[in-house]
Length: 302
Image 1 (cartoon, rainbow, N blue to C red):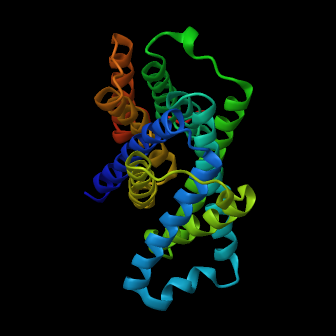
Image 2: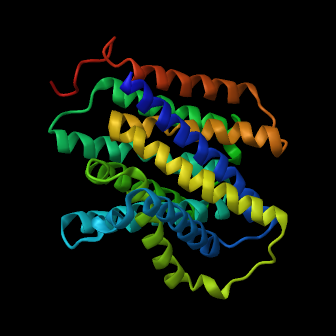
């Protein structure tokens, strides 16, 4: 039952990211929001909201992760090198291309996550893990391209941003367990968001960028902050603590499915037969990683 809870939480996190990614593309395309403004604002206010919540529940104990030592170093790497820069590079990739391209490139993250997990566990990858990654990436690719591969043109800058985002995603997936085993997920995320937001504000001097706050911008910010950061990361990292990074990252493929459905509902996107094939492949991937003991138990190289 606990594993089912972990699976559902990671799926929910991926769905929330899909909603957020589609919303971010709307902000970029229609309101011309700059990613160098959106990323720090999103991080900073997410951190403030979560730490207010944590102070209400944990009082001065919210300062414990900041004590000098190994945990603080891991928190800084996790929060800045993982969470903050994964968001900036992901949004940058979307701004340079589309939410779909960003989703495909970021979803290569399971590869370094699997490699890292295997190195830590001192084992070879299982066949079902490799198969699930290949099927999942293929499914996401079909959903994004609608089967029209010639339209999937990616600039070098977008490619670099997308792959960089994937590497940052791998960092926070592999390091998250060290922190969430000791501290509440909301506390870890609160400090990660706040520290990352402060750094990003300083790097991009976001206070010099201003926008007229209308309802579209306000609601878009609410979505990327409350759903895309607070809900998504807390759900995903809570699930990751239960089922581990190698499996948890694969359930994040639900992001592409959610983004497609949101695009269909609100942005007029149409589904094709290739989309449904992509959905089927992602579903097959979920089945494979959910039932690992049924078939694929042989290790490569053994």
